Image (cartoon, rainbow, N blue to C red; front, side, top):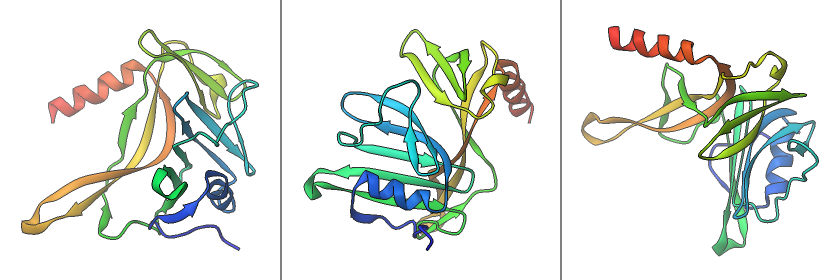
Length: 192
């Protein structure tokens, strides 16, 4: 039985149930959990959600969970009025109505620079936000001073009178890059 659903939100779903549904088709993924007390990155391995170190994953207080791999993204969020959550799973074959994928990827830089790595986790550090452990399969190859960025698929929507706007991005992966490679991309962009 496939856990893949349409990108239309399902209502009345707990975070645990949403993750279980996503894990049916996506045994390996990364993402984050946001709660009033903390925000942290997690890894999904064969249906089990873990975070760096010995800390447990607490979904009871979570108001948002996002998990993604290269093929799909789970979005779950708490809805106080329902005393439950809503979830949606996006994939290349399951896109919200009216949205069209754009041809290019979009990148979002994460705060901090690589300080070190441990197992399959990279530690990013920045004076403003402190330390953040991010799951990365090739953590052993990450070097101090490098940067982490999210890779996503932007989606656009056409409105009246022909206006087309980027309205959302489905996350597809995490990459470690050098500051020089980002500088080169910016220089090429300016030259075009």
